[in-house]
Image (cartoon, rainbow, N blue to C red; front, side):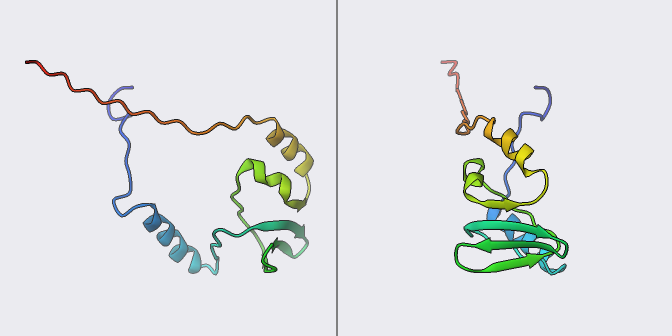
Length: 110
């Protein structure tokens, strides 16, 4: 890679600061971030989306973004169009652990 393409950057304050920023920005529009929430069911209907959690909580919204590990999606009941095609595509994905290898060498001229 040429130039600075190979350089990596990190958030000085850590990734928690990024989440805090998103949370405050989303709150301005009435949105909420729910972390570590076990979702059992997602339903889409004419009025929006309802997300049913293992805790018994139900979240209703016009729109929802759910981030999930691919192997877990099979444990959630999904009720909306085109999901069979998406689930079929997901089942064909190969999951591998991320690998990152950083090598640093120091050549001593003496």
